[in-house]
Every structure is written in structure tokens, then in C-alpha cells.
Amino acid sequence: MSNQYRDKSAESNNFTQQKTQTNIAQELGITKQQLHNYTKLLTLIPELQDMVEDQEF
Image (cartoon, rainbow, N blue to C red; front, side, top):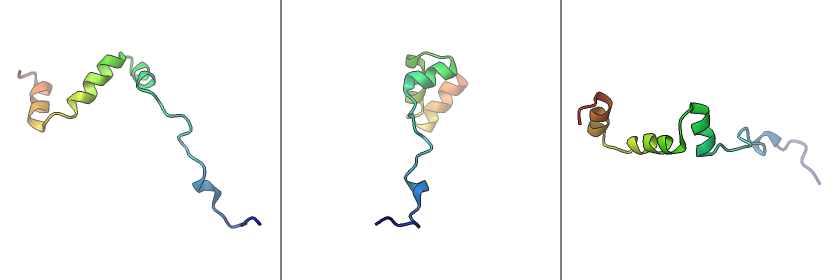
């Protein structure tokens, strides 16, 4: 027996195809290694991020 009131929208996913790092890098026009380096920069403490941003190293 099927429930006619069941919400079928919860079963669908708007993100049917996940993007890979390679896909993202290609869309940004950079290499996968550059993308990796940028994501590593985001894990730095804020003070070091500021130094990199201001090129004070």
C-alpha cells in the first residue's frame, strides 16, 4: 500500500552529480594543485592568512 501524501521531494537531491576537485579547478582556470594550495591556506590561523594576503612573509 502506497501513501499518497508521502513527500517525494525529500527523496530527490538537487546535487545529482558531485563536482571533483579537478572539475572545480577547471572551472576556475587553475590547476588541481593550485586549488589544493588555496584550500590549505584556508586552514591557517587568521594571523598567517593576513600575512599571506598582505605578502608580509
